[in-house]
Amino acid sequence: MDIIRVPNIENYTQEIKDGVLILTPKPVSITEDELISQLTHSTIKECIVKHGDETISSATKYRSITIDIWKSMPTQKILQTTTFNFKLTNENGLNGYEWCDSIRMSFQNKDSKGTFKEIIHMLEVNQYTIYIRVQLSSGKIVIFQK
Image (cartoon, rainbow, N blue to C red; front, side, top):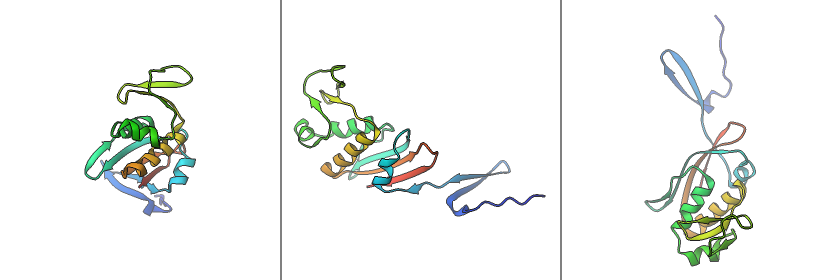
């Protein structure tokens, strides 16, 4: 009978199901800069943005999280604090602008890194908190909280 050795077993949760040992990698905490540098081709597994007890967003797409945060803000505050380009008119399809019905403005999209930077910035502006669990392109799952 062969012995199976698993190095760094403390990095896994262990479960026995139907007589089979299942090892699942534990998520690792990551800094904001580390996460931003590895966002390309990542997938959000779970996200909760809160203001006190109120949930602002539980979306799993960077753009949807951003829009949920914007929806919680007055238009003037968005325009004064955003890192995105906005127009108050429907510019859908012109110069990269996309109309967003829920905030009644058009904005130019950014990639996941630029969008996540906006999320972080808007968290600070509004004193919101975030818990996000992300699967990086490497397959590694990381957690970021702020």
